Amino acid sequence: MGADQAFLHPALFYRSEDEFSSGVGQFVQEGLAAGEPVAVAAPPEHVSLVRAALGADASRVLLVDMTEAGRNPGRIIPGVLRAFADGHPDRHVRIVGEPIWAGRSAAEYPACAQHEALINHAFEGRWVTILCPYDAEALGARELADAHRTHPWLIDGTGEWRASGDYAPDAVVADYNRELPPPPGAQSFAVAEPDLVELRLRTAEIARRHGLAEERVEDAVMAVSELAVNSVEHGSGTALVRLGFADGELVCQVRDETWLADPMAGRVPASPDQVRGRGLLLVNHLADLVRMHSDPSGSTVEARFAAG
Image (cartoon, rainbow, N blue to C red; front, side, top):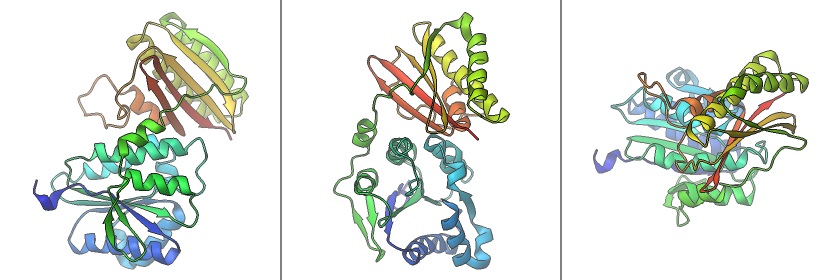
């Protein structure tokens, strides 16, 4: 790979719809003019802006609603970014990815910041450019400062590129590797292999009691089961499971004594012949939010499922 085939990950700071359309539109049109595959994953109002700006050329761009495909930040790399880039392995690919917007919850944001940091590891050595727009008017000081730390290149409203003097993605991953408090009123119980069937039944009962649709009950049961099986098989033989409800979501936490040292765990697409190691990847695809905390004393994985 030559010097002109490096991975680029710039943050675009915009202050109006016009600045968004101008910055993203130029990026997309340059890709189309070069015959490059282009995808745009953003909240629906921004997807609409891109579609209107491109006109007939919109049919040449993959447009993705990030509020659906990327509601859980943990599935954006495997399910959106890698899914598109891996489909064009021998060509330069352009992707617009906007995973952070003003409506993100306080629970979601740490996972969003870690996602932005981990993009740099996920695409190291790949001939891909991923442009991440940030609303400099609506987002807070923390979000904008973290953008400087997770992106090696910054673009302002004039379109000028400059290197970020604060670039430190691994520090962001570490900063948001925070302990996950049990949800209020959580039921806690130890689970070993003989308890897995009972765990599935209890998860389904609690999920239904809190109003999850039957389809989401099944997803929650599958996710908790996968997490518990992983903990039992790879940990000390038992897992601590907590099931509770907070902020309109079923909160499922599974803790064991294993140190999950790889922050990319669950974010790498599985190969077609891969038999094992899909559990956390599956949980990322099922849940509305997945958060993790891991250190030498053990690991906690939290999966959330919205009710209603």
